[in-house]
Amino acid sequence: MKIILYDPLCDLLGSSTNGLMTYTYEDVVKLTGHSCPTASGAFLMVKKGLEELYGDETPLRGGIKAVVQGKLGDGVVGVISSVVSYITGATDISGFHGLGGNYDRCGLLSYDENLDAQMLLQRVDTGKSVKITYNPQLVPPAPQMQQLMQMVLSGNATVKTKKDFQDVWQGRVQNILAAFDTNANLVTCKYE
Image (cartoon, rainbow, N blue to C red; front, side, top):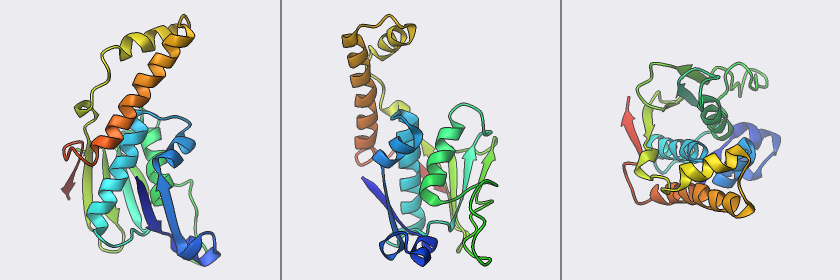
């Protein structure tokens, strides 16, 4: 599963072939340093949102505004916004300010505690936007997940218990990624 975008800045600078950038979930794991339902959900929300906004067109990296539900520093907002920023190029004040008045990506990422979805993506060129909701409860964890997690976090887990926990944890992540193609309710979009 991958997301391909055209990045005009990469094209200008020769950073990628024809300005095309490919992102996979494995890239997101490298960015966040872990694989979890939140990271996979953020990846899937961006993928679904871009598919809805661009259809058969190649999405324009740096041409997408993003709003993440919540306040930066709360819960998993940082993980979600990092993934959104990484893939779309949208940044708050910390990002690239452009070259010669072009390619400025600052101000394309913001946060809204009152957003009635986990994320909103908007095309800068057309203004078309979509609200995206992720429903991870549709892919529940294995029944033993909580108990295994508690044992691992307590520091009293055996090597086998740690491995069992990793297997059920990553099993859920893989099930979430697989469900994207089979369960239309896992990630839903509503046009703004």
